[in-house]
Length: 232
Image 1: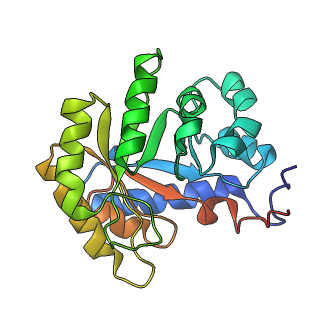
Image 2: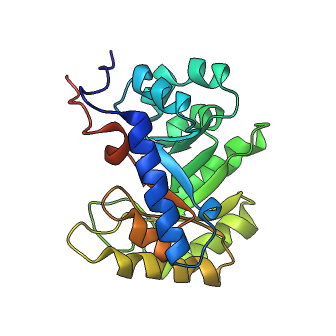
C-alpha cells in the first residue's frame, strides 16, 4: 500500500519551480531548455502523487525497482498514453523480460552479463527501449556501474557486438565529492563515443549537471517531498 502525498506538498508548484530552475540553468549555459528532460523520480510514492504530477503536465517518471513499477504503473500508462517510464535502479537478469515490457528507458546497464541478457531478450521482443550505460565515475566499490577504464570497450561491445540500442550514459557522483568533476568526466566519455544522452544530476545538483551537458536530470525530493518510509 502506497502512502498519500505528504501534507503541504504542492506537486504542481514544485514541478513548476524545478522546470523554471532547469530553464534558467540551460539558458545560462547557452542551451535550449527543451534539450533537457525532467525525469520525476517517483519511487516509493503512490498513485495519488503520480496522478497529481501527471495532471500538472509531467510525463516522464523514474522508478528504482521493477516490482514497484509493476504494482502501480500499468493502469496509469494505459490511461495516459504518452507517459514514459525510466528504470533508475539496478536490474536483475531474471527481471529483464518484465523490465522491457514496463520501461521505455533503461538507465542502468552496468555489467557484461546484463548486456548479454538484454541482447538475447531483445531478439525475442518487439519493443526497443533506449538503454543508457551506468558509469561508476567515482570507482566506488558499493556502487553499480562500469569502471571508467573499461567504459570505451564496454560501449563498443554493446553497440558493435550485441547491437544494443545504447543512447547514452548515466552516473551518480560520490556524495562527498564535487559533482561537476564527475559530470564533466561523464560528458567526455560520451562525447568520444558519439553518445548523445547524459543522465546526470539530482535534486541537490541538477543545475550544475545541466551546465555540464545533462540531457536528463533525475529529480524526486524537490517535486514530491521527502520519500515516505517504507514499512516491512
